[in-house]
Length: 189
Image 1 (tube, rainbow, N blue to C red):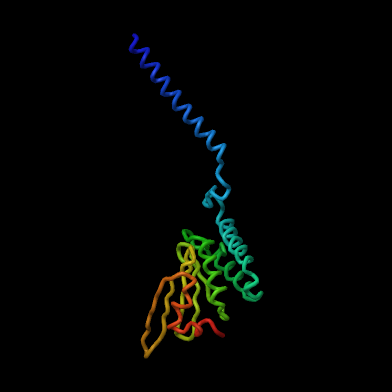
Image 2 (cartoon, helix red, strand yellow):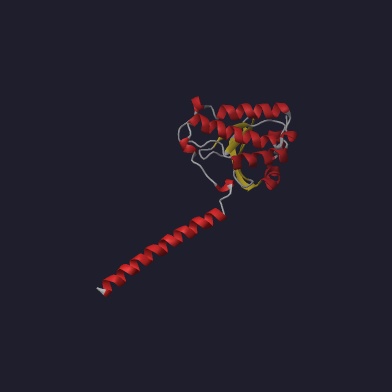
């Protein structure tokens, strides 16, 4: 009997210890609440048209932070392209809307390179922005990744053959990486 009472006492002590740990955890979370920036929500719970609207609105807000570096016509054309890319009637289910980090990289590249010609825009399957400049049969395509990185591909005709060159770099070195291929061909009017 004494042994049974002892085991019962131990199981009660273990339950009490678990309760105390739970209370301590809750008190700790009250003392150190999560920052609003660390809170996440599921966009899957939102209807598709709201998800697309939110993604477009967020990148337009990012654009407003560098608006002084883009002329009005350039911004308006950019916004039309973004709206067109996120048209719910044309949207492919399973694709990701534009990623803010990718768009931020795009804006940094545009401000740094100052292209006079506007690119055609598209999205990768994962929501990265892709810009393409075409001149005759030659094309420069840049995928804008998060954290100020880009991947680029050049396709140009030379002696009836298509040559392809590719690279990956930080935005800060993109001009240098493209220099041997004369990017002014795509960027200048």
